[in-house]
Amino acid sequence: MLHLIARQGQVDIKTGIVNALKKMQGAFSMVVLTNNAMFVARDPYGFRPLVLGRRKVEGREQASTVVASETCAFDLIGAKYEREIAPGELYWIDEEGEGSVQFAESTRTAHCVFEHVYFSRPDSKVFDRSVYETRKQMGKVLSDESGVEADIVVPVPDSGVTSAIGYSEASGIPFELGIIRNHYIGRTFIQPSQSIRSFGVKIKLNPQREILAGKRVIVIDDSLVRGTTSQKIINLVRQAGAKEVHFRVASPPTTGGCYYGVDTPKRRSLIAAVKTQEEIREFIGADTLAYLSVEGMMKAVNAPYESYCAACFDGKYPTELYGSDL
Image (tube, rainbow, N blue to C red; front, top):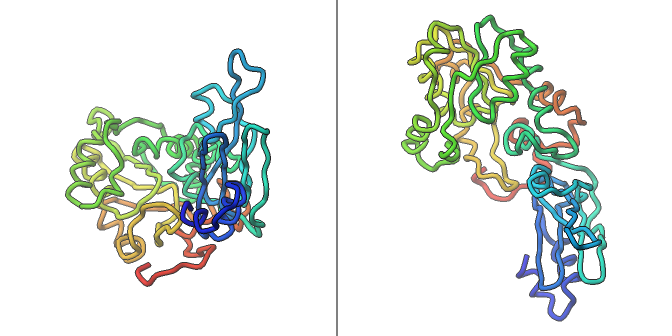
């Protein structure tokens, strides 16, 4: 970005940013700060969320302008959500006031559906939709699509909790926190080595034997990427005395990598890209395995399929990809 601006020579910063944005491809939500101005831009597809808000400051008549990737950030600082930065929009605020320009026309949106599945916090609204309600609905649809007789519904914390609540409500099977998470450990599926990922699962998640022993358990997780974490979780639940373990995934099989800003494995490392569903079930050690369908996911999101990017699930990338190792 800075290189593209610098190559233009003697132009004002606003013109330089607009010209640079017109040459950029892919997914981006960015903020550029100068000594006396703030510039905010979002790619023409609107892959990532970017929201604008106002915060009243004591002793000042004019409210401060704030931007964030999620609305929950506004709640933390007492700001009020105003609107989304539009796809292809450059917004700015400086000493003279505020304004915006459409640096590129948005022929279609390609909102990342994985924001609803995993990335965003449940107390946020992304793409003008409640993440909590969307995930809860995913659990309900998952129950409708792949119900099974069981005694309890147990989420993989924390990302599986909301979908598990929805699954429990739709199925009538009691919800239990049968797995407790250590909140001081980071994500496991993006760790570089299998040994680190395996150790991370053991110190991150602890099963409650008093809840799980002798029960037919439905375990709900938000996604299944490599399969190794799911395998460890199911093993932990069985060691705690579960009679049956039925694994339910509140998203479709992940069969493609993301090339829009998410550090996901190459396709050959995605278990759903190289194994059948039955082979995956055997690998993770579940009695049964079922995923939410793509159609079910979009039903839960309650938005037109064509307005979202679901390439990691359906292989339909909205932009041209470069490189052979995809």
